[in-house]
Length: 236
Image (cartoon, rainbow, N blue to C red; front, side, top):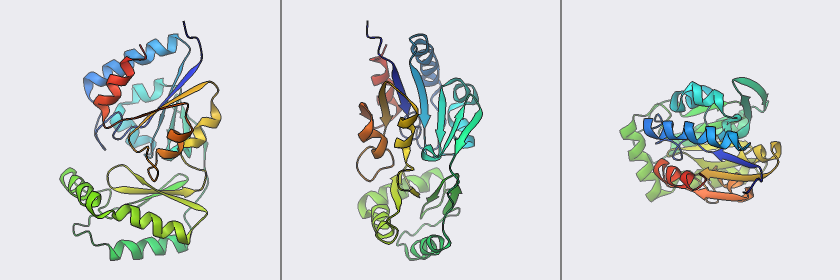
């Protein structure tokens, strides 16, 4: 029997759920049983997402969020263990960056602008042309438009050139995550020992899962929660 300690890290949006949606009930039931099995084997389970605590709980439920060994919120810039805040980054967005973002959003060619385009979170900022308040249909429409026009990649490249000390990475289906270099999801790996196994959907260079995906011992680049479910069965 392989007794090597394993640390499983799971992204949320696009990996355990549809973007900004609740976890499928059958998958949630399976995940809970699967977690119990890994716990008996002394392995550890973590969530790591760009979202804050409340959004994560809304998607996967408080019971599961409280049960796992840790939940890294805001791309690893805030850590909760069993509901208790363990640590968080103090970084705040510079005024100059805020003004540049407003200018870029104003010049965007996207035609269906919504609200909450700039969302400051603990240790990071999340921006989107379409806005966090967009409806599900508008989110999908923007996602398809962005795949053809590469707007988020262009914005990330433009801001990266002007702010070399910050990271600008594509996250979810409509946004860009911003934080100081090194304050990405990979920072969670420093807190564990043993083999690291990551599940995520934005693992290519430029995606917000890339840093942790490229530094984990094993990376499962998934296309949705159904694929995650299938792979998890192999660890039984």
